[in-house]
Image 1 (tube, rainbow, N blue to C red):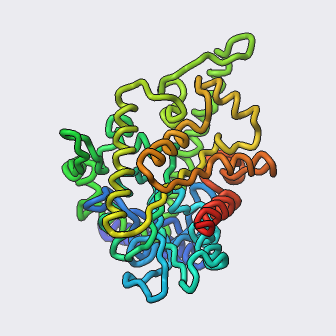
Image 2: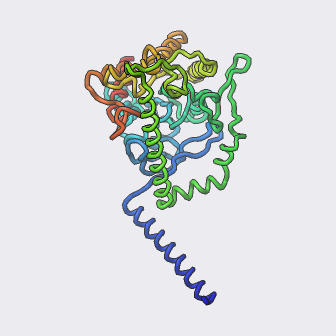
Image 3: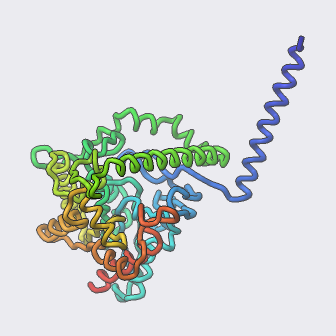
Length: 406
């Protein structure tokens, strides 16, 4: 029979071995520079935001080393007091503006700053472009960012980088089905800020002291970050496997003549593709109404501060896919007439409301077709997802051309 003393010694030895092994693993991961931090935290006004002073490798799509500055921006440090003889441009947006998929010096807003300085768009002035983009933001959160953060930096121009792929349904609780973010809703013909997300279980759980400690511990220990990354990769591969099976099942049910049935609902074609179709569903109609109202409200807020406002519609992957045949098949599949429906609709809004406007999607499609180059995607997923370095470069050139022309 084992004595309690021997058992205690073995447990202590086991614990020592475990702690020693974890410590050596932690040291090794730090030596090789491994990191996979959590970049986001809760935010009282916007639901979530970038965590100040976090840095590490981003590996989910593309790859870059990301630093979040002390004010929670994916950008270099900027003094809040605007220097003399400086023109400041604030960029609002979502993941396309945050742009963790490429190094900071390759992002469109970083390139834009250099191009505007070179073309002397503002003679005798230094140009400073400040990025306020946060992945997952809809127009509601971008408006709150404008009100809560942007004016601290006294910008002369505010650029709304609008992603038609998901910004419309992100502005609708009924479509996005997300409870932990704010929305704006119409009441008596007026857009009202809805902060009920603060009462949601999801938000309160993420904002709890325990969760905050967990995020801190995750960002301090590389071994936890490695475990998190392994879980992410496993989940991603499982999702890819399921998508391949679903696609194979769809191909088996395709008509014998190879044609695709005309489908017009989100269940058949995906919620992201509904933006290419004239809305008939009441939820989509209201989502468009709210989004257009938010853009007008943003225009008014900027005008009150005596700054300029520019709406820039970005490109979606299918819009600039460098093969007209692929684009046409996509339109036949979803039952739409043009991949530019959301861009054209927002252009019409800008013309009605006298909002300065620039559409990137159509000229980027021309560029992609002429040069046979993919502007979205990385590696094995080229042609899908976010802008790659070439996409950012072309976008920067188009925006600079617009502003230099002014």
